[in-house]
Amino acid sequence: MAHTQRIPVVAGVLLAAGGGRRLGGRPKALLEHRGRPLVEHAARALRNGGCGPVHVVLGAAAEEVRSLADLSACTVSVNPLWEEGMGSSLRTGLRDLAGSEVDAALVLLVDQPGIGPEAVARVRSAYRSRTTLAAASYEGKRGHPVLFGADRWADITAGAIGDQGARAYLGEHRGAITLVECSDVAQAYDIDTTEDLRHLE
Image 1: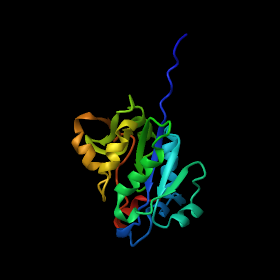
Image 2: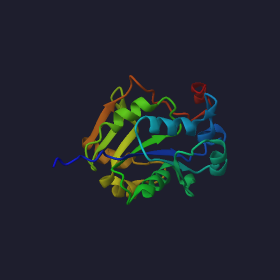
Image 3: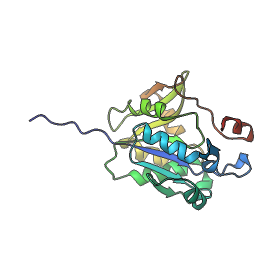
């Protein structure tokens, strides 16, 4: 009997905990884009790009985000240490998935609305095994989303401190990363300062 290959499960992990310090303390998850909160756009990009389940990590104004954004199709967790930076949110997201049937996590940041389902699908398709490391690149420069095979989560979690996220880990394992060019389907700008709000519609 032919052995049927199990389709790999790639979860989407959306880091949406930031308080928007340089935006006058407006939580990024709630910034409006095309009439809806940014967090909804990013969650949809993950889902439409083929990720499932989709986990959303909230922090700043978590209750307000829950009440204003439709995250009904997502698993939502709150990072109590969100003020420590992105690293703690990445730890929260990967810990939520640990011990599950998930083969890889594809991580997206809430403040990059120029990255949609096309880039997500492209990076997701780079999955080969539970040790896969892949990232979108924009004209050769590494960016988001990033895919982490499940066998790497423990080491990534151990090094995810402050605002570093997985940067140190990715730097040490540069040779293992599959870069997936996405500049033709996405734009990698961040919404960090009031200047950047011009990108929102």
